[in-house]
Amino acid sequence: MTVTPAPLDVGAGTVLRLEGISKRFGAVQALKNIELDVRAGEVLALVGDNGAGKSTLVKTIAGVYTADDGTMVFDGRPVRVGSPAEAQQLGIATVFQDLALCDNLDVVANLYLGRELEKAGALDEVEMERQSWELLRQLSAKIPSVRIPVAALSGGQRQTVAIARSLLGKPKVVMLDEPTAALGVAQTAEVLNLIERLRETGLGVILISHNMADVQAVADRIVVLRLGRNAAEFRVEEATTEELVAAITGASDNVVAARAERRSTGGTHD
Image (cartoon, rainbow, N blue to C red; front, side, top):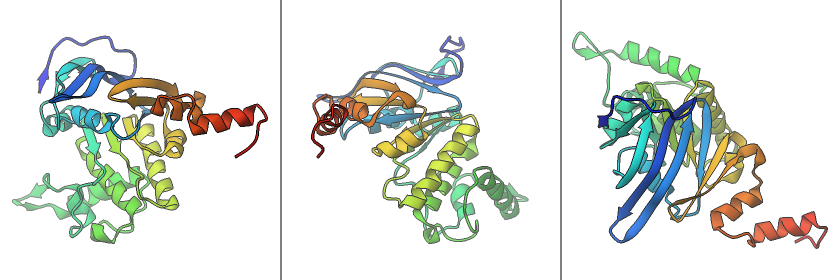
C-alpha cells in the first residue's frame, strides 16, 4: 500500500474518492473511468444490472483487484491498495455476500477470529466477550447471546455479526454486498436499521443491492453503473423507481416507465 504525503482537496466530508478507475480482464473491459465519492455519515447505494461492474468495483476498492488506471483518494491522500489486508489497515471494511462466518463457532469467536485478545499467554475470553456485547449494543443488535453458535442465528442476526466483525478495525468506510439478499421482511428491516446505525456513527457506507425498495429506504445517494461505466447519480429523495430502472437498463421505454407514463396521463392501467 502506497500513500503519498500531500493531501488533496476532495470536498468537505469526502472519505473516499475514485477518479477514472478502470479495470480490464483480458479482452473484457470490466470498469471504464469510474468516478465515485463516499462521504462520512452517508449511505451511498451502488446499483446496476448483472454485469454492470458492481462486484468488480467493490473488489477493486477492497484490494482484491488492482485498478489498471485511475486514482483512489482516501482521507484526502492518493493511495494504492494491493491487498484486502492493506484495505482494512487503511480503514476500508467489506462484508461480502457469503459473510464468511464459521457456523460451528460462537459469536465472540467469529468476531475475533484471527485477531484474538490474549492475557498472560492465554485467550482473554472475558474481555473479548465484554467488547463483543459493547459493540453489539452500539449497533442496537438483537443477539440473544454471544456464546451461541452462529449456526443457531437467523439470517439477519448473522448479517449483524458479519457487520460487527468488520467494525473491530475502526474503519471509516464499510461496504455491504447485498446484505438483505434472501432475508425475510422482519430480518430485512433489522439489517436496514443496522445500516442506519452505521450512518449515525459517521461512517461512509457503500450499499450494493438489487432491491430498489431497500435502496430508497436507507440510501442518501444512488450511483447507477451500466456496462462498467457511470450511468447516473441521484439524490434518493429526487429519484423515482422509473428513473432508476431507466438508468439501470439504459432505456426510457422499458415496461415500468411505460406503465408510469400511461398512469400519469390517465391512460389504461395494466
